[in-house]
Length: 173
Length: 126
Image 1: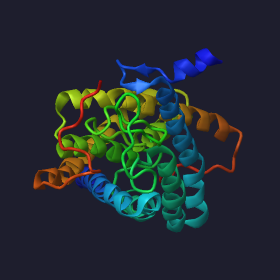
Image 2: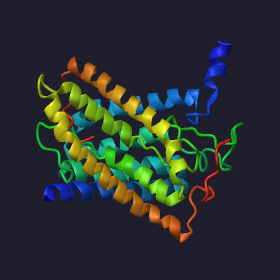
Image 3: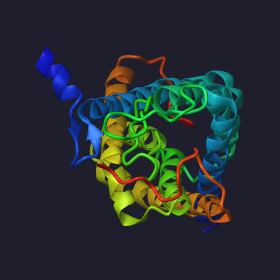
Image 4: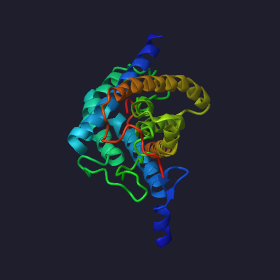
């Protein structure tokens, strides 16, 4: 038991994550993906567009608190540091590099889950065709996201400060 | 062509609005600000991209979710915003890997559960 606790609290410096954080990241992604696939479509069936908009609040909003809540306002105002000098994180999906590494959103998990579920549901013999058909559309959506995100990030050049973190990210120990 | 333009535009707007609004709402209103942002931002983006169908999802084909756009935007936004460079980008890859593994597991589990659960809906939206 002590060994397990020690392993969970061990910082894996090649991945930049605590071993426990690897488990919480996978588990948090699993939960949001599963819940969206099971509930969202059915709520839209039952309630129409209102069901979809309700799902956005009660599924994504709730799982945002689980996966992405941040240190700072409402949790700890001082950006408390862990033993390794990182900002302590409370969400299940741990962000690597803490302040310098790009943000990994649970949108990846949801999109991947819906896609994999669709692959599993493919009728026999249609898997490759469906897979090949979907890839250009996925690439286009990812490209669109990159463009939109890059434009949104340009405010960083106006001198605005985010999260109270310094513009140059602290390097990992 | 216009379907592709719609896919690209809907994805770009969804990604930009998520990362413009979410951090600011969280900073201003804390946890409830984050929850409210999902209600405000994801709902209208879903309505545009998936209910109206701005992101192209032909009938009977695999569902391409706006989550891809949000995830990609998170990386692009942070790269530009924090000016982290290639080292910082590499630091996000383990989290991305875990996130995709967890999401894929969720998809497989959901498929297995849905097989015996006729009440679960078809993936319109999500």
